Image (cartoon, rainbow, N blue to C red; front, side, top):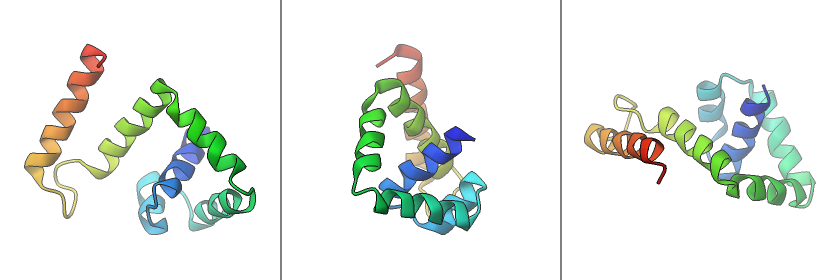
Length: 99
């Protein structure tokens, strides 16, 4: 559950729309709205803390992989299949070689 909440905040910081976040992560609009409000009301302290955490290489790689799996898979509407396969192949090579 914590991973979903962090993913919601990460996607909100990356300016993804609420409907997409809800359908992909299987969370309610209320949950997304709650975390959007939380990010707005804390005067940037939480968002800066989250950005600091994201800079951590392992967490950053986790979210990059999650983002690729959600939004850049072949067959996703409005995604070029050839580009999506290249991105997924590059991600797998990076994971294997540790680059």
